[in-house]
Amino acid sequence: MDENIQNILNHEEMTLAPISKRATAFFLDELLLSFLLIIALWDSFSTATTVEEMINITNTFIFEYMFMKIVYQAFFVMQYGATLGKIIMKIRVIEIRTLQNPSVLSSLNRAIFRIVSETFFYLGFLWGVFDSAKQTLHDKTARTLVINA
Image 1: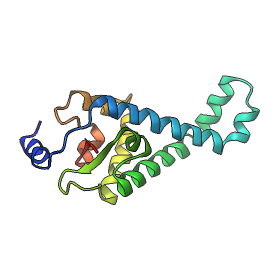
Image 2: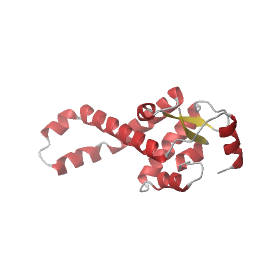
Image 3: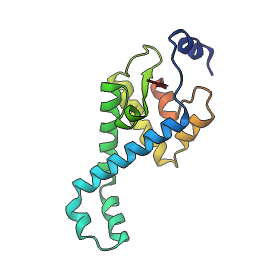
């Protein structure tokens, strides 16, 4: 881990969130957003009779779903320092420079690169497993850390 990051965390008595908490928060957020998509498209889903038809409906609205995820992630991280999943797991996102909730641009950057990571087989998330500061690709680009709240 970058010695500067470690010094900041030690000085402020902060600890990095474990990958298990982050993964659980990710799962909770995905579950919530999937339910919201189903509710929004209920008329279409209720008439689908096969799994293939449901997949086709979902694929039709993939860009809208990505946009919804970006807005959700950026808004909650900027406003609260955490998404609903992170709040439940008692972890939050901070900007390394300020140790506060990420700014609008930082939150938006993080949300967009999170989608990029998902698009490329979650490789940006895997990066966080092996990184000493547990920073994923979207944390690196936004200069953020996920800490225990």
